[in-house]
Amino acid sequence: MPQRIWMVAVICCLAANIPAQDKNDGAAQSKVLALESIWNMAEEKGDVRALDMIFDDSLLYIDEDGSLLSKSQFLARVKASGTGVQAITTQSIGVHAYGETVVVAGTYRVKGMEKGKAYLHEGRFMDTWVLRRGTWVCVVAQSTPVLH
Image (cartoon, rainbow, N blue to C red; front, side, top):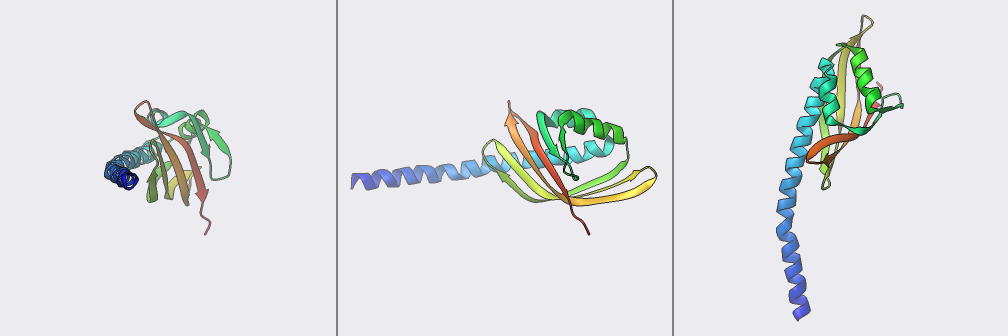
């Protein structure tokens, strides 16, 4: 009988912590979604400084063509593209928090001009964010084009 009481006490303690974790997960998810929006705005404006602050130095970016870019390579590409990007919109399909890690998956649409020609890129993305020294930073990002 004492063992059963102990088990019930453990289960009650674990259950009491679930809402707190859910609340923390919700806050983390909200912060990361805000950073995803900042990313879009910064890329639209070619704001390499803002992007530098939200990407971890170890960033690995898997581009639409399958190439692997480091943080410095990604930032250089944004800087080189100038203001060719006119609009970036994303729709989150899923946001999942795992303690100090948040994964965001969704769809994106990028409109822009390159060499005088309009373009529209659509696809899916997955970004992985971690909490480092109290700040959320993106450590891995991946884009996959959707072909029509």
